[in-house]
Length: 473
Image (spheres, rainbow, N blue to C red):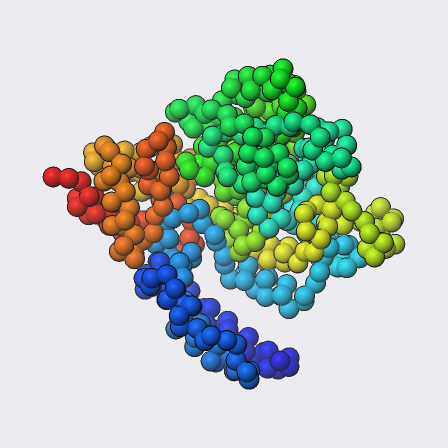
């Protein structure tokens, strides 16, 4: 493909995406086809001769788009959002066009330096503690997801807990990771990958009212493990849990970690974005105790997947834990010690120019534009919660400090399961469920940039109507 051919094909692709976004409200949120339908329509093998972009886009519209769950749809209220936006897509396009491999500063100086500055910009926007800025011992890096950030935090915590021996001898003692019963499954997966196994994770009970980790139970678990010869290595606290957006009490958890010398990682994958709004920074109280922190701009900050912002208070400790320097990567800039090589801040060696889309988003919207987006989502969720609260058939199951509302029909689980199925079968909205205190609970998460009061009100109308059929006479 010549540059001129790319230019013409690019115009066509951008037009296709713009048309897709414009027609999203008219599409069903989820695919109406059975499993295997898309695969059955595809040829059994690749084409012998190349095809024009027009043919590819025709099949994209006819075969692929109808087989998708449309995450940008204004009626998508299922999982936490996976936002994208025009500026983010354009930044990704430039990144792909440049084709930079940013594993070392030397392989892409601007790639590295823009990322460092973007993470400092974000730290300022969220008012993170100064210890996470690159101007001191700390700094930030873009991971692909909060799951990877948790894995990296786990490895650094093991390195610290082992006094540096982990690099050479691996897991030679019994180490423990602590997190709440409401925490994300990636914490258990990270422990498995790190060689600790499922038994290496101790789940800490939560307060029944807030669903947040109990600091008293955490302290008791750490003391019991120490008495049994187990080394407490890592505590993962959550700001905005997946099921209910509960906020673990960092002002009480942090001192426990400091007292016992346990690495504290704070996972704010979803809710961290809310901290661009000063009035929504309550979850960050006590963050000065954290050794690392992450959130996903790709969830609620209009930046396409994959983009997790991960900060550490001590970059030297991180690099010491993960660095491997073969001869073929040695270069004068690295040897000088004056540059950041982000290959040492992650599990993979290679990395693409992800900071570009963040740069595009921050410059296009500005902090005030991002605040407007977050505040609108919180207001829409509150509007929906008011509808639930006013209907005696329903109950709110947990507080809704951000833009997730957890609710259910009063009574047994069966009608709630039926209600969810009926609502999603309409194709007009999409919700998911969780279990809170063992009870089947529906989740409505606002986040799509296209969602408005009209769409939230429509969701409530569909739910209310379906509830009449789900409740036994």
